[in-house]
Length: 312
Image (cartoon, rainbow, N blue to C red; front, top):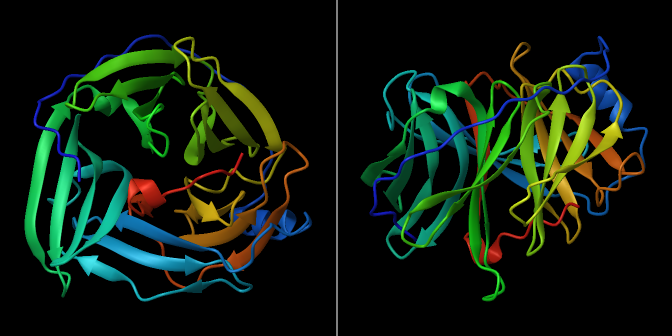
């Protein structure tokens, strides 16, 4: 586990807007419409879905992309945060240890972002929980995610992405000692409702994003200081019902995606083939059993060296 021992500060600038088409389909319609596409490369892919409840519990549940989809028992770490304190959570690494497991990731509490390290024993009880403040200014942001890529020693890097409410997407480099450095920004994403990381490679990161108008896009971001994202439409409509998208690996080239509809307190599961614009194959597996009413959802990822995302 890499720990940050330096208190960090954040930077923010720029603004932008992006337009999208309109549609009135529901999340349930999305599940039906998407199945018209060819099947994704691998069946039965699983996603470890995490959440933070309104009462401050952290949960984990394994969703499997069969038809209909299945949901494993939900494990709960109770009272990890104050009630209603967590606004957003990025992906957490979940790593087995001799004594139990370690979890670590970044959360936004109010206006500030924190690095959070959690140690659990084999029964799932908390042995230690440590929050380190990174910096403020995050009340203006609506989404954030961490991308760590280090399979090649010539390209080790960790980026943090943040989407501000005015539609500007920011990127920072996080150094080995915990120092953050601004590494580009791009306007034009005001219509984005949710975004989830589906690829991380030596040369680029890629997000899957849905808009308030219902369209579904990939956002391909090259690894250079210019930060000029390439936005490609995957579907034109029916995806606006989801407040949150959460993605994980599916086979060598695909992606498993959970769409959370907070209005109906429902989740729908999909498998995607390798992203290729409108030609991308999408299989809708249907509604996941259970109730999905938590304010924040995220992915539990394996240790970085085992975490391969190559959805585009």
